[in-house]
Amino acid sequence: MITKTEIEIGKKYEVKPSEFQRSFVGVAKKVTDKGILFEVEYCDICDRDKAHNTVVADCTDVKQSVGEKYFFS
Image 1 (cartoon, rainbow, N blue to C red):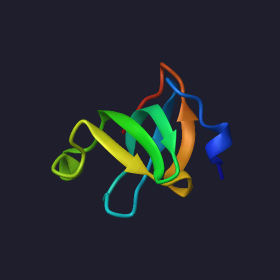
Image 2 (cartoon, one colour; image 1 turned 45 degrees about the horizontal axis):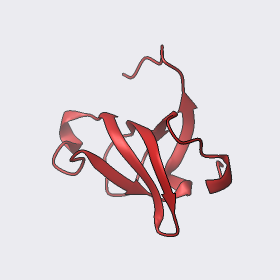
Image 3 (cartoon, helix red, strand yellow; image 1 turned 180 degrees about the horizontal axis):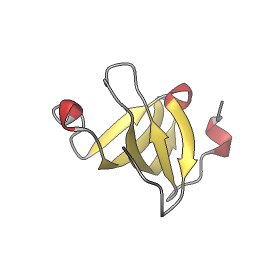
């Protein structure tokens, strides 16, 4: 599990909040007491109504960091 202190601002992460059917890829923008603010880079069509431009997620929702060549299927 990734903790808030391990989150790097500007880095991409695979995130799966409970209200989403599938994971999304987002760039960490800010860490607050309420969670981590992600700018959504990619999400599945089934979750697009939930993923506007940004999503606040808990650190337990963060699955892994992803590189530039990450293939999202």
